[in-house]
Image 1 (cartoon, rainbow, N blue to C red):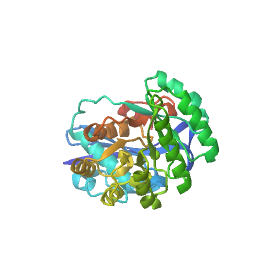
Image 2: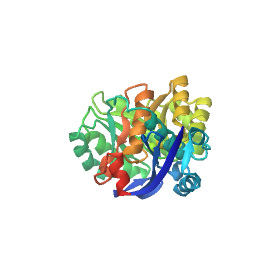
Image 3: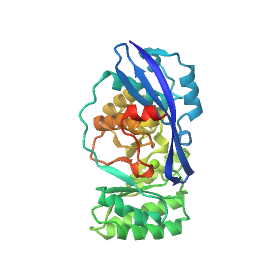
Image 4: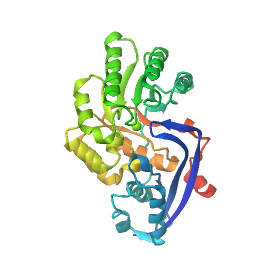
Length: 322
Ligand code: MG
């Protein structure tokens, strides 16, 4: 089958810059793909790289798109190199949406992303009223003493039935990671009725895998790897090296959906699926994968709409605006 290939870059500004331990992020940039088959049927895909997380850069993705001919085949789509994982996702999901009619949507619980620092204390309530029960808070942004203070307030403020995820984005030192894990363990020990700390995400940098493996055995509080498992090859390597904790999978940058399916079905890993701040096009494809591959009932990390101004949800409407 031949497909006519078109692409358009997009930019989406965050309502407020997103603060993580990697710094501040103002504008989400990506590429929307359109594949039209010989019968005129359209498939949509999205390339939404995060190069500081381990994917290709936007420039590399754009270059790849520019170099492709106007007509492409399945062979083109399935031979995209591993160095372009966000492209693998974008093209393969466009190919899939062209081939299949959307399957029945599965009902998900969403995890809502709170702003860093004390802004979280006020921001949670609106999300709670919208139905969010799982929240994520970025840590490793402020000095730890100050963050632990805010954290204590947060645990007292959030309703007891809420779940909280802490995401350090690899920004803690070994001592700080121990302190956070001990603090979270103590919350559990102290009060049966207090909220649940679901896990700490990527406490240490990617280079410190062994230390995180050790910490995952030392504490009751679960650890999830995120930056360490940005791409499929990294995911497979961490699994091979013994990681049996939680894996955060960002379908938008992890690479080929078909190979991801294979891996998850073979190893039955405990996975949390998460957004890369993509548009509705990439999100649709990512949630489709989450529906197929989620083992437990963990909330998906796609509760990020409130970080953008109102967005187009229909692919055609989005395409026309670009
Ligand atoms: Mg994370």
